[in-house]
Image (cartoon, rainbow, N blue to C red; front, side):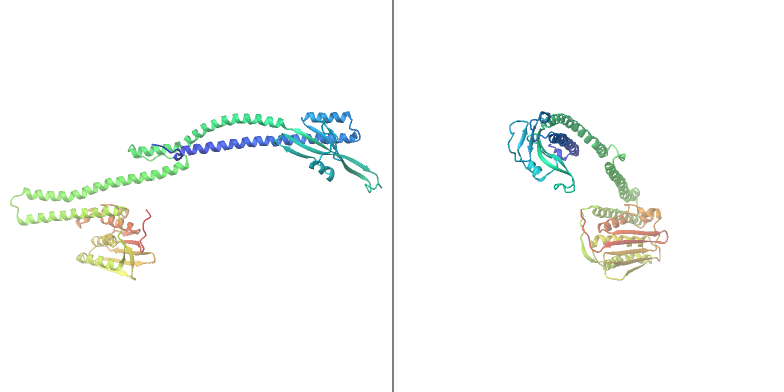
Length: 491
C-alpha cells in the first residue's frame, strides 16, 4: 500500500517547522551580509570625506593651484591614493585636471556631472557614488576658499566673508576589501547554515513527534477500547486540542456504554416478556396433560387462558416489530397532508367503547381546522397509545380531555386524564422499553411496556416534542408538539 506523506500530520508539522526555521536562517543570513556591506561602505565614505576636507584646506593654504609642485601636497595626495588603494585627481575651476595620482590625465579637461554641479552651482556638499559591480566608491569634494572683505568693498557690501569654490577633489576608492570580507562571511555563514540545516532536520522531526505524542496516546487508548480491552474513559490531557478530542470521545464512550447496558437490559426484558406467556401456556398445558377425564368446562377454561397468553405473545411481538421499524433511521415517512382534527376524532371513536366500560367521559376541544404534513399511520398510532393509556390507567367515572391547537409553525395535542398518575421518580423512564410504573396492573390490563417507546419514536421522527406533567392520584397530561410542515432530515 502506497502512503501519501502529505496526508501525514507529522510530516506536515515537520515540514512547517523545517521551512520556518530555514526561511528564518536565510533571512538572517542575507540581512547580516547586506547590513555589513551597507555599514562598511558608509564608514569608508565617512572616512574619505573627512580626509578630503582636510586635504582641500591644505590645497588652499599652500596655494596649490598657483604652484602644483608642492612636495607636501603631492605627498599627501599620493598617500591618500595609496591608503585607499585608489586614484585622486585635483581639478580647478576650469575643469582642468591639475593633478592625477595615476599621472595619466594631467592637464586634461574632465567632464563629470558631479564636478560640474560643484563648480557651476557652488555646491559645498561632498557626493559619493558606490559602484558595486566594479568594487569602487567615487567621491567628489569642493575645494573652497573663504574670502574676507572689508567694509565698503563692492563684493561684500557692508563687509564680511564669502566662500568661493576654487576646484574639486575627485577620488576613486577601492572596495575590494569589502567584497573579500563579504566572501569570507558568506563562506562562514554557509558552514553555519549547513549545521543549522542539519539541526533543523533533527529538531523538526523531534518536535513533530513530540507534538503528536498526545494524539498517539489518544489513538492507542481508542484502539484499546475498540479491541475490547477496556471501557474506561481516557485520562485528560494537558493540551487543549487533545483535551477536546478526549472529552468528545469520553462522552461517546459513555453513550456507547449506556447503549450497551440498554441493549443488554432490552434483550433481558424481551427474553423475560416473551418467556412469561410461554411459561404460562406450558404450565396450563402440563396441567391438562397430567389430569385424566378432565371436564369440558375445565378444559375450555384452560384453553381460553392459553389463547389469551397467545394473544399477549402476539401483541408483544407486533409491538417489538413496530418499534424496530421506527428505530431504523433509513425508514421513510409516508408524508401526506392530513386533517388532524378528523384524525383525532377517529382515534377517540375507536377508544370510546373501552372508555364506556369504566364510565369515562371523553371530550375533544378544538378552535380551528388544522392540516399538517405527517405520516398519518405512525402519528395516529402514537396519539392512540397516549389516549389508550389515559383510558386504561384512569379511574371509574373519570375523564379524558383532548385539546388541539395550532400556530403558524406547529400544532399541539394536549391529552389530560383524571387517572392514577405517574410517580415523580418514574417520569424520566416512562419512554424506556418494557418499563412499567405498575407492573402488576400493566400486565393485568394487557400492557407490554412498549407503547410509550413507540409513541416517543414516532414523534421524534416527525421532528416533534413530547412533554408530560403528572401527579399521583390526580392525573397526567401529555403535550405533543408537531411541525405543520415536515422538514426532511439533512443526514
